[in-house]
Length: 243
Image (cartoon, rainbow, N blue to C red; front, side, top):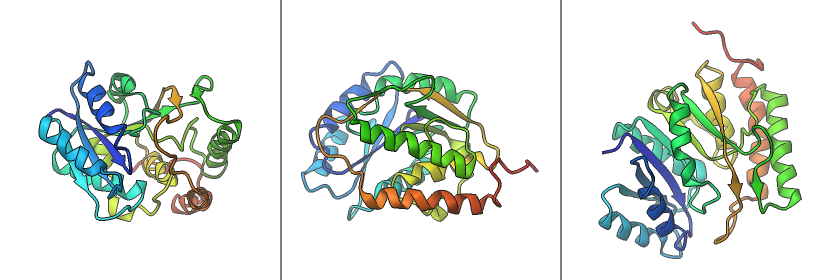
């Protein structure tokens, strides 16, 4: 078993999944991969099983139904902790997250509990997004900072690496959010307790195959979630004092 696990949630990613597996297994660092399939209707789950049968580094969790991004990652985190992985990644299956960035994350994780892949650190590195989507993403980051005080350039991003000790510090069963606000909540829970959060620059490219999972409900959940996080932190816009 390798110390690094890449968790990749899938819903109808039949075309992308074999390419992602091939890329991950060809990286200069050795990694394992966990596919968490949300009962895909296009046969992605069967493709994942076939890939796992060919490659011992590939593992699969099948959800009985599509439970959302957050639930998929939480199931993956619990599995990773049971298997004693040290570095646990979140990564999309559509190549919007470049697997070649993984060595950079691991280097940053040597001195951090959580590493966020940032599309906006030191400039904007987003390809093929319409202006409306880009503005929504940037405004969301500013909104999160204004309400919670988290000083990160890309708090809604979904490409990140957790150290084992960081995941162990979170009561995973109490995580409330499920959409993109899941990313905000997981980071906030660690940041407010004084864990070290670093950012590493990434280039984000919009998906070529498949459809985006962004919906109005996901945006609304994120809007209200930041206020709940502020309450959870005692209305402080800074981390709690270490005991």
